[in-house]
Image (cartoon, rainbow over all chains, first blue to last red):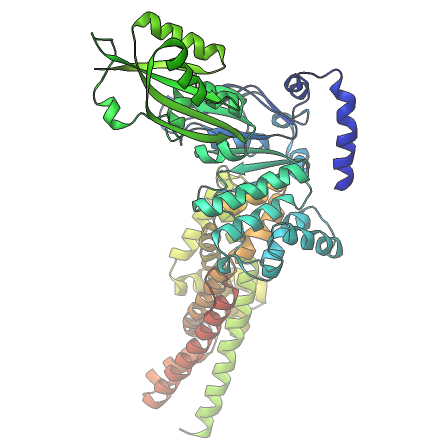
Length: 376
Length: 221
């Protein structure tokens, strides 16, 4: 395990020279690549078929935590099941480490599956097996002998912090503990890819955080690529460095999490971001806001600051340099993929030309802004 | 009750146990795999063979809907083929076994269908073969249900075995009919019934204990 980390570190500097844009390099040899993948289900007793996935092109960079977020029914579950061949695509290719999973026969598919771990929303632990024996199951299936199983399972129990629960049955464990056993089980065969199917959706917020921290730790320490699907913004925001937004069986947006969420271009992304601090305007504002300026109305501006750009001095300088009165109405700071991201909703009393000047001033200092409406 | 009657009672109990144990074992030997197959051979399941599934399902239903006493008579040629004779305790085991197989199969099928499909999916995701899924997941997880199914089977077999007196099978039921009813010996009848009740109670409580021991789904105590 340590060896793998060391080799990677040695390799990286060599790549750096030809690789000032790491994204391009990673995409050239991704862990998972969907190429124009569609999945249709024949609807029973009716001629209309259901299109679950429609021409999906998606890349999961090696070593990343990639999140696929979407509402229920968006096709997330089908998408993740294509990766380990639990579902077959109707058309297109699903490449895992360069191998087209869709084209494999059952026997070869089984050996590929042993290199892909999976965790589930409802944990799917065998009730008849102890924690230890649940983790041992994939090893038994792979035909590993009892002694090697013992050697492999004990450190996994340790990794997930449940060494004291080795002889407990799932019914004696809490939800978070069950998911930890699920994670240990998924790691038993030393996979190169971990699939997470709504792994935290059945857990409370605090347990969710601890499970996400564990996943992030595994991603870093074992250099394991993680592909997760979720409907929870919080999950993606916390651990995913790449994200794809799926809606109605289509990927509507994908890229580095921070860029996608702070760019908030697509309406589905916006809707999902509704819960993110500052995205939703306060009620007292929306109730009296108009779309068109009226005489003597104030302009409501949303100022977005990403990363390290500070807002306060800039807003102060709008007053001192441009002579525009700035009134802060709402605002919040959040963290996405480890980087600060904030929004301020401000009202400006100025004419249109002056507003344009102000927005240019903000843009020059790296602050995006948008006019959301007008208030008298 | 005379010593002769008592000897008859002991003998009849022995015959009943013999028939029930052998028919139960052989019936389970065929019934459990059949039940597993019925539970896993539907469309899109582990061993998809929907037409075989339908045919076997129909045979199971036909056998289960034939009244046992008619089954006993109807398969006499087959019984003779297997046991070399169509009368006697050993011969009676043949129809008992034939009746047991579909009974066990349906109960085992139900027990296996109650296993969370998520577990099958998890095992598939681990790279398990269908056979491994059957042994490591389905049968393991269905153990409490199968234990209950076999308990029910044995209790039913004790009841069925009372009818094989018709082909000279002997046993407790036969004793009750011939001595208790036809010879007006109510004490024999009562004793037979008491022995049967005790037998069923013993089987049921042993089966329940086994099912509880297998069942790890609930917190112990």
